[in-house]
Structures are given as C-alpha cells and as structure tokens.
Figure (spheres, helix red, strand yellow):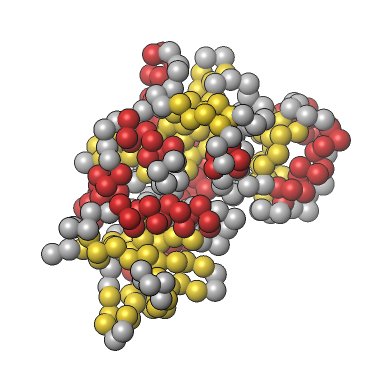
Length: 325
C-alpha cells in the first residue's frame, strides 16, 4: 500500500522561495509507485495542502491532517524541505515528535543547536573541532569596534547568527564599515556572530544516513566569482561548484573524517551539509545545514549524483530511514 507523504515547504524566513523550489523538486521526483506525495505550504498566515490545480485546503494542526472534498487525508511521513524557520530550527521537529509522526530531518534539539551558529561552535569546541575566531553580539549590546577587530582581525565576516542562504552576511575590510554590516545582520536576527576571515580552499561536505549507515558524499569545492559565497554565488550562478573537489587525498581524508565525526557527535539523522575552509592544512568548520538545498542545481544532490545515488533514491531513502526510526 502506498504511503502518504507530506512535503513541507515555504517557511517563515527569507529562504522561503528557495524552499518552495526544493519542495517542488522532491514532489516531482518521488517514486509515484511507492508514495502519494502532497505539497504542504507552511507560512505564518496559513498551513495548506496545495493540489495540482493550485487549490488550497487548510491543514488541521491538531493532527496534521487535511480534509479534501470531505475526505480526510492522514500522513505516514513528513518530508521536510523548509530551509530556515520553522523547519530547520527545531520547531517543526518538536511538533512532529509530539504527534509521533516520522519526519526526514534531524530531531528537535539537533536542529535548534545547528541553526544557532554560536551555540553549535561552542558545543563542538570541546571535541577539538577547529573553527574561526569569533565575536558574539546581541541586539542592544554596546559595540566596541576596537575589541571586535582585536579578536577577529580584518577583513572579517559579520553574520546573522540564525539565518541561511547568506542572508544578513557582509565581508568587512575597514573599521568604518562595521556599523553598517552589523545593522544589516540585525535585519535578519537579533543575534549576530562576527568571524575571522579564513583565506583558504572552501569545501562543502554532505553527510546522510543511507541504508542504515552514515555515508559521506563526494566533496564539493566552492569557487565564488564574488567576494565570498554569497546569495548570488549560491543561487544565481556566480560560483563554480566543483565535485569532486580538486584537493589532495590528505585534505579529502581529513575533511571527510571531520564531517562524519561532527554528524556522529551531534547524533544527527537525515541530511547534513557542512561547510569548511582549510587553514594551515586543517579543515575549519563554518556551519552545518540540516535542511540543505534540494534542487537539481543544489550541492547535496550534485554530490549524491557523483556517488551514484539518483534523486529518486536519495529522497526515497530519506523517507524509508525516517519510517524505520
């Protein structure tokens, strides 16, 4: 009997358009012989099932079901394709855990931890995971420009602490640019993180739970045409994403081991995509994404393809793994 799969997409953050693209790729790719796929749009003002005629039917939040022309549809599993809040920060995970409904991403705690860049780096530090020097700042804090520069140096990156797709990020070269960059980051979040610039090869490493095993996918090298891997570089073709990465066997071994170790330290499930920069021949972690882009152009699907895993298999496996848990 075919399983009913709710593909949640959209969300409350600036990433909602990208999430809709990811969710529609999942919808169009899932094996129709095994699954009945339903597109579920999650927005602040509505949670709705959208059928192929673009009719909308309200989701009953009491049990995450939907009534379609007097027929109640219940779901066997949720495929999470929401980038940003509330799909990547733990809220949807907690909701589905309370309902006892399987979902494809990690658990609530892991989602909340990884979505908070500052907390993630602090949690991993005791395990010897290398990261850039950083300086935290909350909205309303006094801004000591000299203290910031003394800690992280110039150039540096000013980032929203809880945001993705390079929203709210600036590269700062001069002390005089700090205030504007900080104000820009506070548009996305009331917490920011100011990080040391690491000058080295940047790579992205996908790790997934695949057929009961932790699998590290082929590594992608990021070569941005812009000053850094910003929104344009990620989504508007202003970068080269080279898979497999043009790095040595030694670098490959080191970063694969580190990505897998992080996945296992955090007790992750589902997909992760971790970003690293090499400094002094060692990979330094930038961030961990738990709902990475899933379009055909996105990095993790590219890596899966190189590994011989089709999108149909990648998405179907995520569902089967969540149903086993």
